[in-house]
Image (cartoon, rainbow, N blue to C red; front, side, top):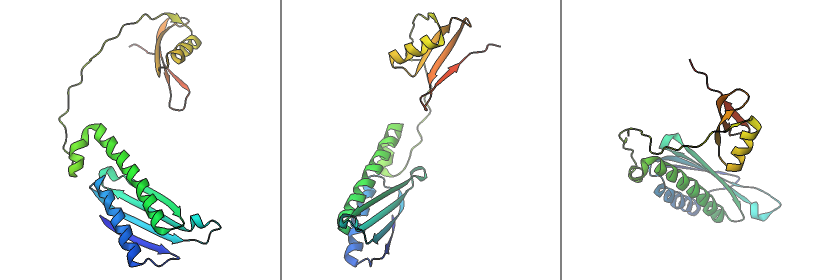
Length: 180
């Protein structure tokens, strides 16, 4: 991992530089293929002494071009570095968990990916239920009562099956099938 440390209104002492390097090298354990990290340290004249030092870190992860960013303030430079490293560690650990959940777990720990052979998809569960004729308003009410994200119903007015679903923005969508 390439590490760039820059200071604004502050001279970075060799001790501070070694401390930052040591702390940031520990984040490699979360994702081993991190490309580089940029650290910006600044000392600001603030009313609150707890916010005197500002440490910003941007990490370029090689996994899918992911970029991680952390920013912390503190009364002591070393405490601010500790806190920003903790933030980045959480972000990287979460990313590692997502990659692991997608089936890339063990190779990720070794720093490389192995393509999994495509698995043939199959129906593993069948469900039957009675579809009663109802209005759109009744279907929305039923879907909300059940706590589902979609609801199949028979529209009493149109005498056709409809699929009601919840959109990401919280509104509803309605699929009306057309047959050829």
